[in-house]
Length: 199
Image (cartoon, rainbow, N blue to C red):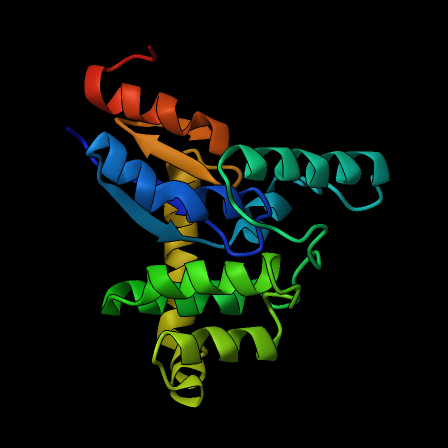
């Protein structure tokens, strides 16, 4: 079965749902998912897509929708969480570095918990430092490495790869060249991986 690419960007609110349920979902469905962080702000800026700024009704809907879906999945959240986050690029550069070393997924899950359960803005030094410590990583060392030209360029490369794959938002799932956008499209992506159509 083709692997499903899970394109996520720390800073995306709806990615909270997928990030918290994906491990159990993979175990339940015997599926493999490739976690791929990217900079969703770059993508949205290119498309002139500003989804929630200056849109209080839509923003209120988003938080209520996440609250409903979190309850469905038995995921705890204290909402609304601080939004938007301040240093989206850095948080995802750290995630990308961590993915190459085996701790990126845990960092992402822990950071989302700090953000959505403890109410600490995910792009803040406080949240990032705490997430790294909980993952047994040295914050000073990791922050220095994540800010390096190599990792900065690597995130830009991954973001361009997301754009080339047709990704325009997070979370997105790409399989067999098909894009499925949104946490609620995860099962459709699995169907496409297994049988080449949605069932």
